[in-house]
Image (cartoon, rainbow, N blue to C red):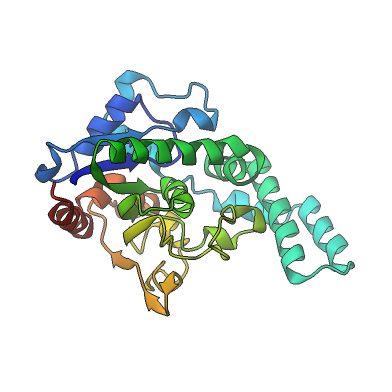
Length: 301
């Protein structure tokens, strides 16, 4: 077998697939130059108008800015105290709901109020992905599986490198694969450490033989590297940022099966928490470069 790499981007406006692919390639190690590299392009599924950015805005600096989470703490606080949410809390507190039902209902109300008050695009995208537009979640996953299948059919072992919201797509795709079609998964700036705790609709689709939201997709992949900056609000939600983010939860026979790698994102800007999410610093980080190196050694790339 030889080696191939499949990339998948996160949410936010993006340029055409070919321009986005070239931008990511700039930050991969020289050893990947001769490899087949594909980009799973799913920005059109978000319903942005227009679905892609103009060609004159395709430079990497612009792309990094578009990937950053929209920080709207004031709007979230306003939503959490809105009359609609408070009324829902009072209503539910008088009924025989379990804690899970109460939590999910309140979070759903709070999230919708937040998106309505703030117009926060990150929150809108999450609501659409997990709840309102099933095709967004399903079709993005299928596109990734199709890209992996194409590389496997060509005789390649496959590494998947996923950024931000793309890591959710990659993880859920890996749960559906059955023959270790992914040799190595690298997640960068991933919200997987916390996103499935939000509310029930955020949990991944149930697929045998997995019974919980946090299981190593042992049938779909072999190795998993999770690279995060402790200052990245997407990867950590700024909670217990100094702790390992995923490996403590995903285990097999009580042993960690994921290599958590904290880094200092070299593209982070002082005072700008969102810049710690920059894909360029992640791709150039030592753990990502090392993961690629080991993948090429084993896959014969």
